[in-house]
Image 1: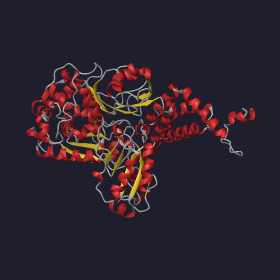
Image 2: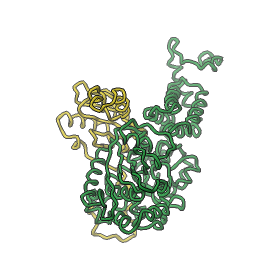
Image 3: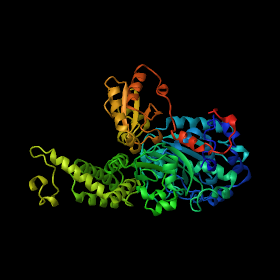
Image 4: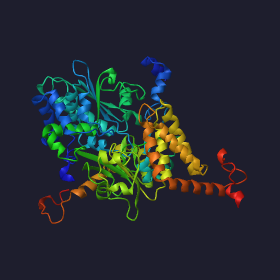
Length: 446
Length: 152
């Protein structure tokens, strides 16, 4: 794995946060090459030819996205999405913390490709240390003439600003990010118009994830064919995967797309505590539908995860071992999405709320088997019915848990009901669902 | 709030709609030292609830509130993006983990004594580093440059 790394090649170089060290290992060569030896179209073509797909979650071709921006003399913007709020994902934090200049260079190459004169890095407010490190790197880049007016004498100018968020998951959604950057509530916008046409301050805007932009300098220096030498045909390149949860060695690992998932979970991260088995795993952050142990032998790339009914997403693998009740996992996630729902769309605001309530009922023994079907249908009615995918992000994993672990939900419900019944004292029996009133209570039957 | 709204030339309602949206903006005075403990899935799987409990005990602050002496502001936070060091907390912006119950007392005493937040507990960032280094060790049988041994 190590000799086939792109982004992590020099990650443990001492002093890499300083521009001198970064230049010594070949830093800013990509920017220099792009600005002085290539024109905007050539950079765009190279990025498109590399097949680089967005690493933030959607997996859309980065070069294509950049080419959607209108040409001509309008004010254009580039936003780097460093909000990284997806539970189970922490790759951007390490990339920014250890190698901030790799991102600064990538942002400037992206801005050149898009013809953007202003670039913003929107970093989540919790990452105070990383924001400080980036601020320092940006001022070093300005001092060396890599950012600002007439960069490297090429005539291209671009201002770079690091903007800190203030704690909201939804601001990782691209249009919510733009609203937040403009100083408003981070509510998602209706699409279309897409940000490529009408984004920040109504100008055409390119939005890319940290990891995506970090790849650009390597592609420019080494060429698209070199990049295609990594990974699979449809998912070229490497991916930094964040493995967390019930594994021995949680952390970030850069792997080539297409390696078996088992190699990541067991080989790199050490697997669960000996003697325990993997019960469920999220292949791409907490928004991805869960997969089970049998799916561990699938290749880890965009297509295979999609075919298995899940998604590669942000590359955050969360491993849940067999000792953890699945209802607990579902409830924790639903509570998170309820907290983070911005409240603009009804299916998401109410759907997340009622899912939490139903899961709490299951846990406290007040649920009836019908609740599972209702809950499953609530999930189906959220998906695709909102402006953004926050609601879907709860509906997909919770829906998949009901699908894969239905019997466990039923057992959990039954066990909780027994417990509740045992604890009944003087008529505080759990409320019965009207449809079930004719069914005798277990105590009556006895 | 009214004053801020007047200065910003927006209505107080608009200002509150924005300010209340973000988790890190406080609308009321809170304890001096902000401690955010991540309670999302990856941290929960590794015992975040014990850590929250221990911090509440050690700081005397209710969860999602401030201690009566005004020293601490304790929050059970949604994902802080550091699942590699789970369970973890952000001590005034400084990430620390993996935490154990005893660490809560250490943090509380350190801050009470006026210590700087960046000096509390050893910084164990990126647990995955160790995993990666183990992977990078040359396979057995491959000759290695002896001079690099022990350099780490």
